[in-house]
Image (cartoon, rainbow, N blue to C red; front, side, top):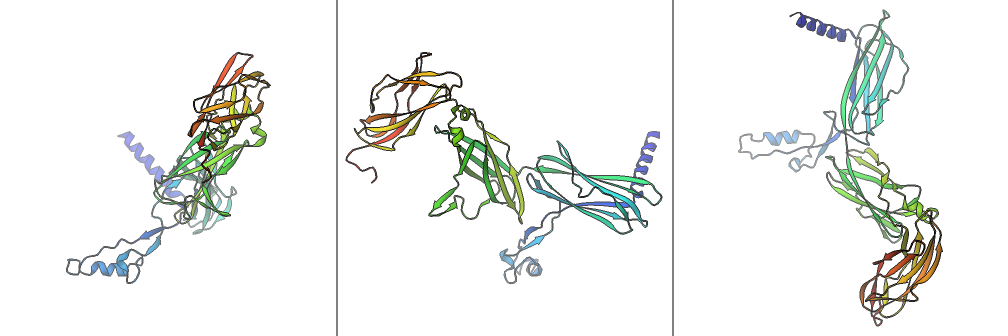
Length: 423
Protein backbone atom coordinates (compact mmCIF):
# COMPACT_ATOMS: atom_id res chain seq x y z
CA UNK A 1 0.00 0.00 0.00
CA UNK A 2 2.86 2.38 0.86
CA UNK A 3 4.56 1.59 -2.44
CA UNK A 4 1.40 2.49 -4.38
CA UNK A 5 1.10 5.78 -2.48
CA UNK A 6 4.71 6.62 -3.30
CA UNK A 7 4.12 5.83 -6.98
CA UNK A 8 1.05 8.08 -7.04
CA UNK A 9 3.03 10.90 -5.41
CA UNK A 10 5.81 10.45 -7.96
CA UNK A 11 3.29 10.67 -10.80
CA UNK A 12 1.81 13.82 -9.28
CA UNK A 13 5.29 15.36 -9.03
CA UNK A 14 5.97 14.62 -12.69
CA UNK A 15 2.64 16.10 -13.76
CA UNK A 16 3.23 19.18 -11.64
CA UNK A 17 6.70 19.53 -13.14
CA UNK A 18 5.19 19.42 -16.60
CA UNK A 19 2.56 21.98 -15.70
CA UNK A 20 5.11 24.28 -14.13
CA UNK A 21 7.00 24.81 -17.40
CA UNK A 22 6.43 28.23 -18.84
CA UNK A 23 7.27 27.27 -22.41
CA UNK A 24 5.54 24.88 -24.81
CA UNK A 25 7.39 22.97 -27.51
CA UNK A 26 5.79 21.92 -30.79
CA UNK A 27 7.52 19.94 -33.52
CA UNK A 28 5.96 19.35 -36.94
CA UNK A 29 7.34 17.69 -40.04
CA UNK A 30 7.32 19.82 -43.18
CA UNK A 31 6.06 17.87 -46.18
CA UNK A 32 4.43 18.82 -49.43
CA UNK A 33 0.72 18.20 -49.98
CA UNK A 34 -0.61 15.18 -51.82
CA UNK A 35 -3.05 14.83 -54.68
CA UNK A 36 -6.56 13.75 -53.70
CA UNK A 37 -9.01 12.24 -56.20
CA UNK A 38 -12.70 12.13 -55.39
CA UNK A 39 -14.29 8.70 -55.63
CA UNK A 40 -17.80 9.19 -57.07
CA UNK A 41 -20.70 7.28 -55.51
CA UNK A 42 -23.89 7.32 -57.56
CA UNK A 43 -27.34 5.75 -57.52
CA UNK A 44 -30.59 6.03 -59.42
CA UNK A 45 -33.21 8.58 -58.39
CA UNK A 46 -35.69 5.84 -57.47
CA UNK A 47 -33.24 4.32 -54.97
CA UNK A 48 -33.49 5.09 -51.27
CA UNK A 49 -30.85 7.93 -51.17
CA UNK A 50 -32.59 9.69 -54.08
CA UNK A 51 -30.51 12.57 -55.39
CA UNK A 52 -28.45 12.87 -52.20
CA UNK A 53 -25.21 11.53 -53.73
CA UNK A 54 -25.59 13.71 -56.83
CA UNK A 55 -25.99 16.85 -54.73
CA UNK A 56 -22.95 15.96 -52.61
CA UNK A 57 -20.76 15.46 -55.70
CA UNK A 58 -21.88 18.77 -57.19
CA UNK A 59 -20.94 20.53 -53.96
CA UNK A 60 -17.56 18.76 -53.72
CA UNK A 61 -14.76 21.23 -54.64
CA UNK A 62 -12.61 18.44 -56.12
CA UNK A 63 -15.06 17.66 -58.95
CA UNK A 64 -15.52 19.38 -62.29
CA UNK A 65 -18.86 21.01 -62.99
CA UNK A 66 -20.88 18.91 -65.41
CA UNK A 67 -18.49 15.91 -65.10
CA UNK A 68 -18.81 15.00 -61.43
CA UNK A 69 -18.92 11.24 -62.06
CA UNK A 70 -15.84 11.04 -64.30
CA UNK A 71 -13.11 11.47 -61.62
CA UNK A 72 -11.38 14.18 -63.67
CA UNK A 73 -10.67 16.61 -60.86
CA UNK A 74 -7.84 16.47 -58.35
CA UNK A 75 -7.06 18.75 -55.45
CA UNK A 76 -4.19 19.19 -53.01
CA UNK A 77 -4.63 17.99 -49.46
CA UNK A 78 -2.40 18.66 -46.50
CA UNK A 79 -0.70 15.62 -44.95
CA UNK A 80 -2.69 14.08 -42.12
CA UNK A 81 0.16 12.05 -40.57
CA UNK A 82 3.92 11.92 -40.28
CA UNK A 83 4.26 9.97 -43.54
CA UNK A 84 7.12 7.81 -44.75
CA UNK A 85 10.75 8.98 -44.85
CA UNK A 86 13.03 7.28 -47.34
CA UNK A 87 16.78 7.00 -47.48
CA UNK A 88 18.29 9.79 -49.59
CA UNK A 89 15.45 12.26 -49.01
CA UNK A 90 15.73 15.50 -47.04
CA UNK A 91 13.97 15.47 -43.66
CA UNK A 92 12.58 18.91 -42.79
CA UNK A 93 10.97 19.86 -39.51
CA UNK A 94 9.46 22.99 -37.97
CA UNK A 95 10.27 23.62 -34.29
CA UNK A 96 8.34 26.22 -32.31
CA UNK A 97 8.80 27.25 -28.66
CA UNK A 98 5.89 29.33 -27.35
CA UNK A 99 5.69 31.30 -24.10
CA UNK A 100 2.38 30.23 -22.54
CA UNK A 101 2.96 32.14 -19.30
CA UNK A 102 2.34 35.74 -18.28
CA UNK A 103 5.98 36.51 -17.48
CA UNK A 104 9.09 37.17 -19.51
CA UNK A 105 11.40 34.19 -19.90
CA UNK A 106 15.14 34.72 -20.33
CA UNK A 107 18.11 32.88 -21.83
CA UNK A 108 16.12 30.47 -23.96
CA UNK A 109 18.25 27.86 -25.71
CA UNK A 110 16.65 25.43 -28.15
CA UNK A 111 18.71 22.46 -29.31
CA UNK A 112 17.73 19.80 -31.86
CA UNK A 113 19.76 16.61 -32.24
CA UNK A 114 19.15 13.62 -34.46
CA UNK A 115 20.17 10.29 -32.96
CA UNK A 116 20.81 7.40 -35.37
CA UNK A 117 22.17 3.93 -34.78
CA UNK A 118 25.72 5.13 -35.41
CA UNK A 119 25.95 8.85 -34.59
CA UNK A 120 24.34 11.91 -33.05
CA UNK A 121 23.98 15.01 -35.25
CA UNK A 122 23.31 18.58 -34.19
CA UNK A 123 20.66 20.10 -36.49
CA UNK A 124 20.14 23.44 -34.74
CA UNK A 125 20.54 26.46 -36.99
CA UNK A 126 21.96 28.50 -34.10
CA UNK A 127 23.56 27.49 -30.81
CA UNK A 128 23.21 30.93 -29.19
CA UNK A 129 20.56 31.64 -26.56
CA UNK A 130 17.70 34.12 -27.01
CA UNK A 131 17.95 36.89 -24.41
CA UNK A 132 14.25 37.07 -23.52
CA UNK A 133 10.85 35.90 -24.72
CA UNK A 134 7.73 37.90 -23.91
CA UNK A 135 4.36 36.29 -23.16
CA UNK A 136 2.47 34.91 -26.19
CA UNK A 137 5.64 35.15 -28.29
CA UNK A 138 7.49 32.26 -29.85
CA UNK A 139 10.86 31.16 -31.23
CA UNK A 140 10.70 29.37 -34.57
CA UNK A 141 13.32 27.28 -36.31
CA UNK A 142 13.35 25.05 -39.41
CA UNK A 143 15.86 22.21 -39.61
CA UNK A 144 16.90 20.16 -42.64
CA UNK A 145 18.84 16.91 -42.85
CA UNK A 146 19.61 14.59 -45.76
CA UNK A 147 18.88 11.10 -44.46
CA UNK A 148 21.82 8.76 -45.07
CA UNK A 149 21.03 5.80 -42.80
CA UNK A 150 18.29 3.19 -42.69
CA UNK A 151 16.51 2.31 -39.47
CA UNK A 152 15.29 4.07 -36.36
CA UNK A 153 15.95 7.81 -35.99
CA UNK A 154 15.15 9.84 -32.88
CA UNK A 155 14.77 13.63 -33.02
CA UNK A 156 15.71 15.01 -29.59
CA UNK A 157 14.50 18.57 -28.93
CA UNK A 158 15.79 20.15 -25.71
CA UNK A 159 14.77 23.53 -24.27
CA UNK A 160 16.51 25.32 -21.39
CA UNK A 161 15.52 28.73 -19.99
CA UNK A 162 15.62 30.97 -16.92
CA UNK A 163 12.58 32.35 -15.09
CA UNK A 164 12.26 35.86 -13.67
CA UNK A 165 13.20 34.52 -10.25
CA UNK A 166 16.50 33.17 -11.63
CA UNK A 167 15.46 29.52 -11.62
CA UNK A 168 16.94 27.49 -14.46
CA UNK A 169 14.60 24.94 -16.01
CA UNK A 170 15.11 22.33 -18.67
CA UNK A 171 12.94 19.86 -20.57
CA UNK A 172 13.14 17.81 -23.77
CA UNK A 173 10.96 15.75 -26.08
CA UNK A 174 11.69 12.73 -28.25
CA UNK A 175 10.24 12.01 -31.69
CA UNK A 176 10.96 8.59 -33.16
CA UNK A 177 10.59 7.72 -36.84
CA UNK A 178 11.73 5.00 -39.22
CA UNK A 179 13.77 5.56 -42.39
CA UNK A 180 12.89 3.13 -45.16
CA UNK A 181 14.78 2.01 -48.26
CA UNK A 182 13.28 3.46 -51.47
CA UNK A 183 15.24 1.46 -54.03
CA UNK A 184 16.57 -2.05 -54.34
CA UNK A 185 19.83 -2.04 -56.31
CA UNK A 186 21.44 -5.22 -57.64
CA UNK A 187 24.59 -5.32 -59.76
CA UNK A 188 26.17 -7.89 -62.07
CA UNK A 189 29.66 -7.79 -63.61
CA UNK A 190 30.84 -9.28 -66.89
CA UNK A 191 34.59 -9.40 -67.55
CA UNK A 192 35.60 -9.21 -71.22
CA UNK A 193 38.82 -10.60 -72.66
CA UNK A 194 39.88 -7.08 -73.67
CA UNK A 195 40.04 -5.96 -69.99
CA UNK A 196 36.71 -4.20 -70.41
CA UNK A 197 34.16 -4.63 -67.63
CA UNK A 198 30.41 -4.48 -68.26
CA UNK A 199 28.22 -3.48 -65.31
CA UNK A 200 24.50 -4.24 -65.24
CA UNK A 201 22.59 -2.36 -62.52
CA UNK A 202 19.03 -3.47 -61.73
CA UNK A 203 17.11 -0.71 -59.91
CA UNK A 204 13.69 -1.46 -58.43
CA UNK A 205 11.23 1.07 -56.98
CA UNK A 206 10.04 -0.48 -53.70
CA UNK A 207 7.94 2.52 -52.59
CA UNK A 208 4.19 2.94 -53.11
CA UNK A 209 4.43 5.93 -55.46
CA UNK A 210 5.98 6.42 -58.92
CA UNK A 211 9.43 7.96 -59.28
CA UNK A 212 10.89 10.20 -61.93
CA UNK A 213 14.44 8.97 -62.50
CA UNK A 214 16.36 12.21 -62.99
CA UNK A 215 19.84 10.70 -63.18
CA UNK A 216 21.45 7.28 -62.92
CA UNK A 217 25.19 7.50 -63.54
CA UNK A 218 28.31 5.53 -62.73
CA UNK A 219 31.30 7.30 -61.20
CA UNK A 220 34.25 5.05 -62.16
CA UNK A 221 37.36 4.46 -60.12
CA UNK A 222 40.60 6.21 -61.03
CA UNK A 223 41.74 3.36 -63.33
CA UNK A 224 38.69 3.27 -65.64
CA UNK A 225 36.79 5.35 -68.18
CA UNK A 226 33.06 4.69 -68.39
CA UNK A 227 30.70 4.62 -71.36
CA UNK A 228 26.96 4.71 -70.74
CA UNK A 229 25.02 2.19 -72.84
CA UNK A 230 21.50 3.41 -72.04
CA UNK A 231 20.98 5.64 -75.07
CA UNK A 232 20.34 4.95 -78.76
CA UNK A 233 21.99 7.17 -81.35
CA UNK A 234 19.71 8.79 -83.91
CA UNK A 235 21.84 10.96 -86.15
CA UNK A 236 23.66 13.58 -84.14
CA UNK A 237 21.36 13.18 -81.14
CA UNK A 238 20.57 10.25 -78.94
CA UNK A 239 17.51 9.26 -76.94
CA UNK A 240 17.06 7.15 -73.86
CA UNK A 241 16.20 3.48 -74.23
CA UNK A 242 13.51 4.01 -71.56
CA UNK A 243 11.59 6.62 -73.55
CA UNK A 244 10.93 10.31 -73.05
CA UNK A 245 9.08 9.94 -69.73
CA UNK A 246 11.55 8.30 -67.39
CA UNK A 247 9.06 7.13 -64.75
CA UNK A 248 9.54 4.08 -62.59
CA UNK A 249 6.25 2.72 -61.26
CA UNK A 250 6.00 1.01 -57.83
CA UNK A 251 7.71 -2.42 -57.79
CA UNK A 252 8.97 -1.93 -61.36
CA UNK A 253 12.59 -2.76 -62.20
CA UNK A 254 14.84 -1.05 -64.73
CA UNK A 255 18.21 -2.26 -66.02
CA UNK A 256 21.10 0.12 -66.69
CA UNK A 257 24.26 -0.96 -68.55
CA UNK A 258 27.74 0.57 -68.44
CA UNK A 259 31.07 -0.32 -70.05
CA UNK A 260 34.30 0.39 -68.19
CA UNK A 261 37.56 0.45 -70.08
CA UNK A 262 41.00 0.73 -68.45
CA UNK A 263 42.80 4.02 -69.00
CA UNK A 264 45.81 3.72 -71.34
CA UNK A 265 48.35 4.29 -68.58
CA UNK A 266 46.91 1.38 -66.58
CA UNK A 267 46.02 -0.91 -69.49
CA UNK A 268 49.71 -1.40 -70.25
CA UNK A 269 50.31 -2.77 -66.76
CA UNK A 270 48.77 -6.20 -66.91
CA UNK A 271 49.49 -6.99 -63.28
CA UNK A 272 47.76 -3.84 -62.07
CA UNK A 273 44.51 -4.37 -63.98
CA UNK A 274 44.51 -8.04 -63.05
CA UNK A 275 44.17 -7.22 -59.36
CA UNK A 276 41.69 -4.32 -59.63
CA UNK A 277 38.42 -5.12 -57.87
CA UNK A 278 37.02 -1.62 -57.17
CA UNK A 279 34.98 -0.41 -60.16
CA UNK A 280 33.20 2.72 -58.95
CA UNK A 281 29.87 3.76 -57.44
CA UNK A 282 26.38 4.49 -58.71
CA UNK A 283 24.84 7.94 -58.27
CA UNK A 284 21.01 7.88 -58.39
CA UNK A 285 18.79 10.98 -58.29
CA UNK A 286 14.98 10.85 -58.40
CA UNK A 287 11.88 12.94 -57.71
CA UNK A 288 8.56 11.85 -56.22
CA UNK A 289 5.07 13.24 -55.59
CA UNK A 290 5.31 17.02 -56.11
CA UNK A 291 9.01 17.24 -56.85
CA UNK A 292 10.57 15.98 -53.62
CA UNK A 293 14.14 15.17 -54.50
CA UNK A 294 16.05 12.13 -53.34
CA UNK A 295 19.59 11.00 -53.94
CA UNK A 296 21.51 7.82 -53.23
CA UNK A 297 25.13 6.88 -53.75
CA UNK A 298 26.11 3.27 -53.44
CA UNK A 299 29.28 2.18 -51.74
CA UNK A 300 32.24 1.27 -53.94
CA UNK A 301 31.19 -1.58 -56.21
CA UNK A 302 33.62 -4.47 -56.30
CA UNK A 303 33.96 -7.36 -58.73
CA UNK A 304 35.79 -10.65 -58.59
CA UNK A 305 39.09 -10.06 -60.38
CA UNK A 306 39.51 -12.54 -63.25
CA UNK A 307 42.29 -15.04 -62.89
CA UNK A 308 44.50 -15.29 -65.98
CA UNK A 309 47.17 -17.58 -64.59
CA UNK A 310 50.82 -17.01 -65.45
CA UNK A 311 50.34 -16.33 -69.17
CA UNK A 312 47.42 -14.54 -70.77
CA UNK A 313 46.54 -14.75 -74.46
CA UNK A 314 44.04 -12.28 -75.92
CA UNK A 315 43.02 -11.35 -79.46
CA UNK A 316 43.66 -7.75 -80.50
CA UNK A 317 42.48 -8.02 -84.13
CA UNK A 318 40.34 -10.63 -85.88
CA UNK A 319 37.95 -10.38 -88.87
CA UNK A 320 34.26 -11.10 -88.35
CA UNK A 321 33.81 -12.84 -91.69
CA UNK A 322 36.38 -14.77 -93.79
CA UNK A 323 36.24 -16.57 -97.12
CA UNK A 324 36.42 -20.31 -97.45
CA UNK A 325 39.94 -21.63 -98.20
CA UNK A 326 41.41 -18.13 -98.24
CA UNK A 327 44.10 -17.21 -95.66
CA UNK A 328 43.30 -14.54 -93.07
CA UNK A 329 45.33 -12.90 -90.28
CA UNK A 330 44.71 -12.51 -86.58
CA UNK A 331 46.78 -10.52 -84.07
CA UNK A 332 47.39 -11.99 -80.62
CA UNK A 333 48.65 -10.38 -77.46
CA UNK A 334 50.67 -12.56 -75.09
CA UNK A 335 51.19 -11.18 -71.57
CA UNK A 336 53.42 -12.43 -68.78
CA UNK A 337 51.13 -11.98 -65.76
CA UNK A 338 53.87 -12.89 -63.31
CA UNK A 339 55.40 -9.99 -61.42
CA UNK A 340 58.69 -11.72 -60.65
CA UNK A 341 59.56 -14.40 -63.23
CA UNK A 342 60.86 -14.07 -66.79
CA UNK A 343 59.54 -16.63 -69.27
CA UNK A 344 61.07 -18.22 -72.37
CA UNK A 345 58.12 -19.12 -74.57
CA UNK A 346 57.73 -21.54 -77.49
CA UNK A 347 54.62 -21.35 -79.73
CA UNK A 348 52.99 -24.51 -81.09
CA UNK A 349 49.99 -24.53 -83.45
CA UNK A 350 47.66 -27.53 -83.74
CA UNK A 351 45.22 -27.82 -86.64
CA UNK A 352 41.54 -28.69 -86.17
CA UNK A 353 39.09 -30.21 -88.64
CA UNK A 354 37.86 -26.81 -89.81
CA UNK A 355 40.67 -24.34 -89.01
CA UNK A 356 44.28 -24.79 -90.19
CA UNK A 357 47.32 -22.78 -89.12
CA UNK A 358 49.72 -21.45 -91.78
CA UNK A 359 53.26 -21.18 -90.50
CA UNK A 360 55.97 -22.94 -88.53
CA UNK A 361 54.90 -24.66 -85.34
CA UNK A 362 57.30 -24.88 -82.41
CA UNK A 363 59.08 -21.57 -83.01
CA UNK A 364 60.79 -19.60 -80.29
CA UNK A 365 59.14 -16.36 -79.16
CA UNK A 366 62.04 -15.36 -76.97
CA UNK A 367 62.13 -14.16 -73.39
CA UNK A 368 59.21 -12.24 -71.95
CA UNK A 369 59.86 -10.05 -68.90
CA UNK A 370 57.45 -9.89 -65.92
CA UNK A 371 54.23 -7.84 -66.55
CA UNK A 372 55.22 -7.25 -70.19
CA UNK A 373 53.50 -8.17 -73.46
CA UNK A 374 54.30 -9.03 -77.06
CA UNK A 375 52.13 -8.88 -80.17
CA UNK A 376 52.05 -11.71 -82.67
CA UNK A 377 50.38 -11.88 -86.10
CA UNK A 378 49.31 -15.37 -87.18
CA UNK A 379 47.81 -16.67 -90.44
CA UNK A 380 44.96 -19.20 -90.66
CA UNK A 381 42.83 -20.91 -93.31
CA UNK A 382 39.26 -22.20 -92.95
CA UNK A 383 38.12 -25.35 -94.75
CA UNK A 384 34.51 -25.58 -93.50
CA UNK A 385 31.73 -23.02 -93.85
CA UNK A 386 29.72 -21.64 -90.94
CA UNK A 387 30.64 -20.30 -87.54
CA UNK A 388 33.98 -21.85 -86.67
CA UNK A 389 35.99 -21.74 -83.46
CA UNK A 390 39.69 -20.89 -83.43
CA UNK A 391 41.58 -23.36 -81.28
CA UNK A 392 44.88 -25.18 -81.01
CA UNK A 393 47.41 -22.66 -79.65
CA UNK A 394 49.99 -24.00 -77.19
CA UNK A 395 52.55 -21.94 -75.27
CA UNK A 396 55.40 -23.69 -73.45
CA UNK A 397 57.65 -22.04 -70.88
CA UNK A 398 61.02 -23.76 -71.34
CA UNK A 399 62.26 -22.59 -67.94
CA UNK A 400 59.61 -24.47 -65.95
CA UNK A 401 58.67 -26.97 -68.70
CA UNK A 402 55.05 -25.86 -68.32
CA UNK A 403 52.56 -25.83 -71.23
CA UNK A 404 49.54 -23.51 -71.50
CA UNK A 405 46.70 -24.58 -73.84
CA UNK A 406 44.28 -22.13 -75.48
CA UNK A 407 41.15 -23.44 -77.20
CA UNK A 408 37.96 -21.65 -78.27
CA UNK A 409 39.84 -18.38 -78.41
CA UNK A 410 37.32 -16.75 -80.76
CA UNK A 411 34.81 -17.50 -83.51
CA UNK A 412 34.74 -16.44 -87.16
CA UNK A 413 32.02 -16.74 -89.77
CA UNK A 414 33.28 -18.64 -92.84
CA UNK A 415 31.43 -18.01 -96.11
CA UNK A 416 31.91 -19.21 -99.66
CA UNK A 417 34.31 -17.27 -101.85
CA UNK A 418 31.50 -16.75 -104.38
CA UNK A 419 29.29 -14.96 -101.83
CA UNK A 420 29.65 -11.31 -100.90
CA UNK A 421 29.59 -11.06 -97.09
CA UNK A 422 28.43 -7.45 -97.37
CA UNK A 423 25.19 -8.39 -99.16
